[in-house]
Length: 74
Image 1 (spheres, one colour):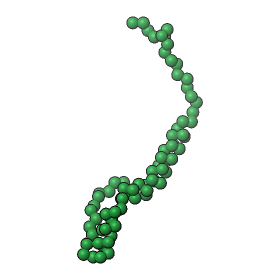
Image 2 (tube, rainbow, N blue to C red):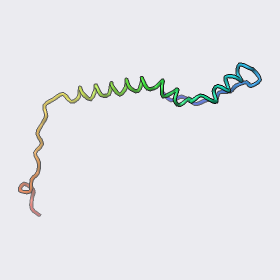
Image 3 (cartoon, rainbow, N blue to C red):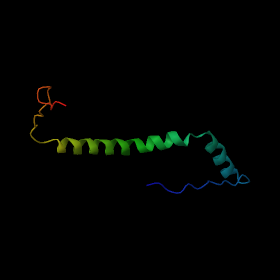
Image 4 (cartoon, one colour):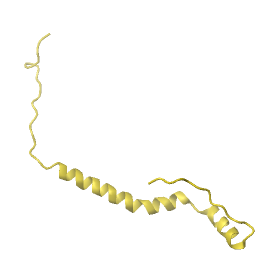
């Protein structure tokens, strides 16, 4: 999903683009991206969690523990 990062160029001779350039200096793009990616990330985590719950269906099998009497003597 990663894309190539390209620089954004503004024509500071144009009043509109100069104003957009001024605004862009004050924006926190990482916070904007986090805000937009959070719902997608939460949906993926919920999907993974649901898949794990489906995999756990089954009968638990007891595990035999090794005690000192069962261990071979060396």
